Image (cartoon, rainbow, N blue to C red):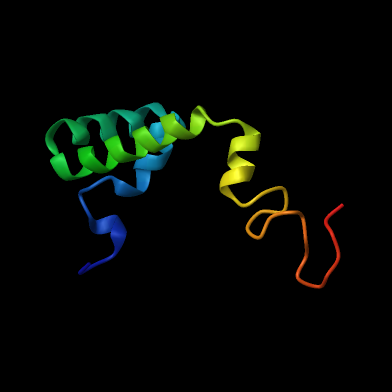
Length: 86
């Protein structure tokens, strides 16, 4: 990267919000227009959209399992100091 991120004509910093539908209408139009002609940003957008769609299919229990159980990584709700999570 050779300059500040805001100097980039690309829209990477807006793609997460775009995938979630959280942009203002003007920003959304800007991103959509950019994606129509920029293959690099379009690939990044499609990857994010695929990940968001996959996450939407998971239940809370699925997500906890991915993180290692009720206590997150390490599972079983154990704390490093030997206690348990409430």
